[in-house]
Length: 458
Image 1 (tube, rainbow, N blue to C red):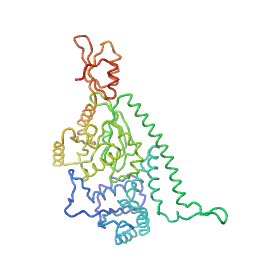
Image 2 (tube, rainbow, N blue to C red):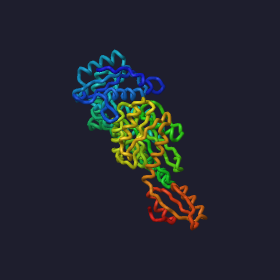
Image 3 (spheres, rainbow, N blue to C red):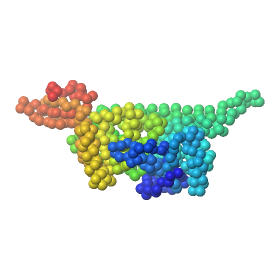
Image 4 (cartoon, rainbow, N blue to C red):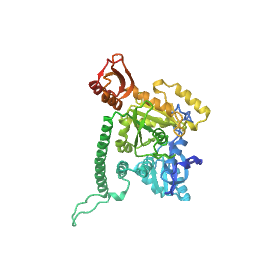
């Protein structure tokens, strides 16, 4: 096992509290083909093994594991029984015993048989990447809705683990009397109980979806556009959310610090009000069961008028992280190339030196104007004014501009327009009529035209 040099920055990922166990973190990654770049950049999306391992260590620290050793295990092929080779299995068994590690975290997806075989060989609890992420989500959930979604993901994961995971579950129970049938196996009972609980949770989540839809419908009656923050976990979404809304949502330098969504109203310089939504962070190899379980929460993103894709440009794997976020968006049915909805926000520029900033600014300037990213620092506030202007411009691009004529005495009508539309211009004409230019969502344009006299479109 190739050892990992200790990086003190990772210590900041661990929340305060006592450790839950001594752990070894393994990165069993396939060897890089000859001639492949070894160092990724913002223009190239390759994920460096060292960065992948660092992320896995961060995930382990996020549940207060005491990481006593971490290292990369290069693989030429994946073994069906143990994922890694027998020599490495024996080496890690000795390491776990000497370090008194009761948990081994494997940054990969293990089958139930592989997990069982490794636990026997190492005499320790084995967690794969999916199980580790589920553990984090279980700790982070605070609301009833979040807890339901996490439990659904856990049960879906456990259901797949029942097959051949534990041989004692396959023993048969006898029926009444001497001639009773074989009865129902423990495996079948457990599977049936899980299925019943999943059905109950899904019914509860359907109520959550209906309740959220009612909230969205009520917001739709007042034309407040919705801007949703999405991005890789620990990209700085919550810090940026607090900066833009002056709220106090939990922010920390740890993975998955935010799990439950938060919405706040924000007034833009033009006077337009929007709803800003902070969502759970994404991560590479995000289990499909988590995407499905959190769909009720992520519908806030699906319905958003503008999506702010926040990227940590100080991270060496920023391009690969961006690719992972785009894959999750596509899984939700969102076009990641929609220039009218998506704005890329390159965050944490305060961590870059002068040359790094210049390189990023040049790279941003080379992008087409409709897709040009906004460089910001959520910590210092640098660039947030340009971001707000970009949000206004993007919302305006989707809205319809109407020229209206009103009676100056129609104070109620003028007040209605100020409440339900974005008033861009207002002037009194020579004929004594009040001319107003307003901007409104396309689905509200018919209501405005029906209520007021609209001049021909310009």
